[in-house]
Image 1: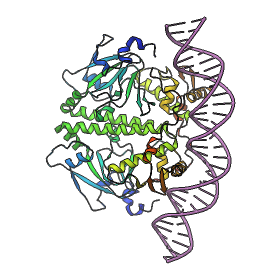
Image 2 (image 1 turned 60 degrees about the horizontal axis):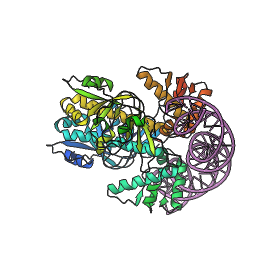
Image 3 (image 1 turned 45 degrees about the vertical axis):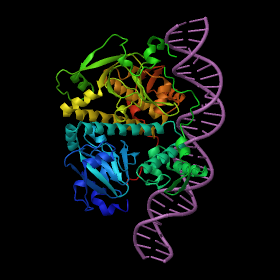
Length: 261
Length: 261
DNA sequence: CGGGGTTTTGAGACCGGTCAAACGCCGTGG
DNA sequence: CCACGGCGTTTGACCGGTCTCAAAACCCCG
């Protein structure tokens, strides 16, 4: 289905249970110290002896894990761009996030013991593998680290609340505007330009993520351009007026706010 | 504003920073053992010496905590019904959940150090107070407990994903139907009737929670009644056809599902 | 019995979805 | 190098579900 599939059939199509336990098809492996990792997830560095964690590379289209796969590792995005989705009982796919550097993957597997979501790499990307058992042991030895693990999960939860928040009440235009603004800030945090960048995902994926039709995404982008807030050309985005994007808010709060008793 | 406010003005209107650190206005306090708590959140009981956690009672309209309040405790709902909300920069209120027995409150404060949400009791309710520092200490002593804490948070995350999932793609009728079905199952799990119960929240709160207008909630309830699936009279609900409620699904997946590369 | 809040019901408007078609980008193969 | 074909994107027309606005009925509680 995808042109790249044939090249990496053993991991992309055949879907072995643990693709990264196979031979590394890229031939490249790196290792991160615990200190590096702490830094990446913005956690106070814990001084630890000689802990090292494996890096794994993924090609576009390769899956990091899939639903129902036994949980044993968390992952931290070291570089690249990915897509995490969840599939309902009917096979409908819903985009949950577009993870990038610093994001944690796999937390949804801690509870049930199997991953609930699917993560696909959308570019060449590199992940740090954190075997969960090892993490727990560190937690025992380093209370601070344990705390920060919890905090990271809380952060993930808050992030989802933000999305949830956006999906209700916001008009299609506001959703796309916020999406662009969030991307912009994210890129800025990663050291890229916040005003000029390329979308890594299709209109369809954006629409799915935001809960609107892909045609609407296209129309809204055109509208935002007409309003002079951005320039769009296919995947290339220029942001002229970040404030305008951010300030698009809840559809109409005309009626009184929810009474608080 | 609310008739009950005057009775408990010191906690409901004046909003002291930590209402429950004031004199207990009900005069009643209970204590739970760690084992009891483990049981409530469906966690393997860890045998611990003589740990006890304070109970706190709340009257309708009383707040458990509010945004920006310093975080130091988690709470477990021991009894009663509550409402958790988040407020955006413009003061718009969004209902995040209707916590009831067994639910954990306050996890959103772990990361930032302050609570991000507000929790209001909608009935007389009783919460178990878990000082976060104490929890961390238990985590050190009991690895199993620590793991389960993480799992509980992962569960919360999964639950939110479910809501997120429902809010996209589902028609207004399907949202309300699912809401009722979820409530029904929840009540069943608590030992109440799953087919006959009272709503604790207004149409406005339901609509806010589901991302639809309160009038639409009202209309959908009427429609579900016409279809013979339920009976409604104000807050009193009878469910005749649970399967029908559950089976209302995504609006129309006519178009092909998101290609998986 | 009165009043505020909640719920219901109706009518009209509009956003966004659906369907359809055309265009352009890009990789492929001749 | 160019022609072909697939996929992503754009644009238009139409339709329908929901929202908005409005008003009346109802419930609860004082």
